[in-house]
Length: 468
Image 1 (cartoon, rainbow, N blue to C red):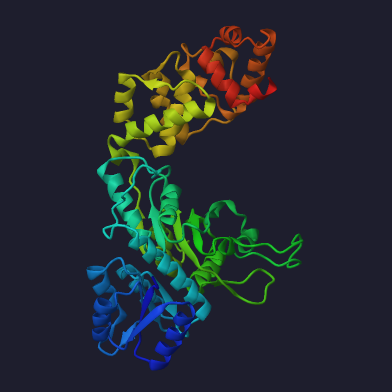
Image 2: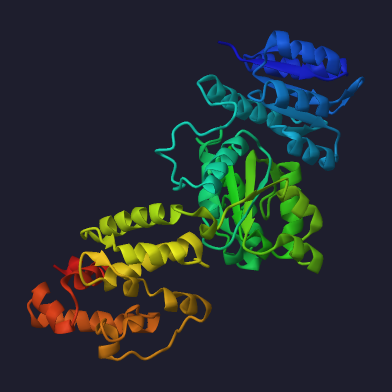
């Protein structure tokens, strides 16, 4: 069936221009010049998408947005704002608008917007619930059944229907990038690229080139044209992780790119339109960074149109055990080992632990425990939770490790989790033991004072099996 678009604007010339553009795209159209007529057309014409001007004779575009949010939330609405009225556009997004387009209307950007929005309508037509409750949880990589996680999944589904920038807030290790990727995967942009970037890992001198690209010869070392991150995420999603680490000079340029939906490569002449949704996150408190003058307030408002809180592991109850089982399966598959099991005491210890490092810490704890467990079961001593927090706060880098400290798990389990400076030392000892026993792993494990399981894990870890 031909998809339908309703155009709402009090200027006949604008209506005619938009109608002509949409008809050339093979779409069916209807128009209205005020709020009252628009509401009637929504009921009778049943559009798949609405384009509405912000200023109307008997009201505003907000009236249309709120009506659709209440009566037909499956219909995306894009608002048309006056040039420079970004505050109105942000308010419309907060009210539930799908996206916005500025006057004078750039027809190329409009076509991109319409195509993406109509993909959303098609998803709704084939059964996406208007209440945004996830219908198939089996493929969702966000693991958990707690109330906090179920609510997070519902919110993700709702946010996937919008173009609004989302600021994802949560402690380190809670899975903010995973949440961002799920927003992308459930959106009409899922066929486009999901481009994550750690803003704190890019040298300041290269930031503009990384984000916007560069032309050959624009600076020393620019031996060819390079596509930037914004262009790579065209028709997709750009995830700005640790966005608070951007220098102020780059924040200005990022703000312009978001507002104008266009970028100019370093050494380039013309701006190129980009259809990119922006998601962002940081472990820092952005409000505090704004107060300190480290982060631009105007950029903060553009990125924080919608704030999504990711719950800590401590708030997720029995999800800890679900995640533990998932990671134990993963570790067993990764290292081609029999799956380790948690003893009852270990289950109790994990359930009562606060997990300052959240999900990431849980995975690290279990991976370490798998190397320490003497038998089939992981015991509380193998978890090393008394020392885990100490290691996170004060990592040891250059500690010398004796052979007994490395391998005698029963006498000194704390030292079995080797710090970086001990890796080569341990690896060399394992190689020597394997060579002496002609790669008889059972005999080598006995020589090293390890269980066969621990040796097998380390052989995989150091990729020694490729020498076979």
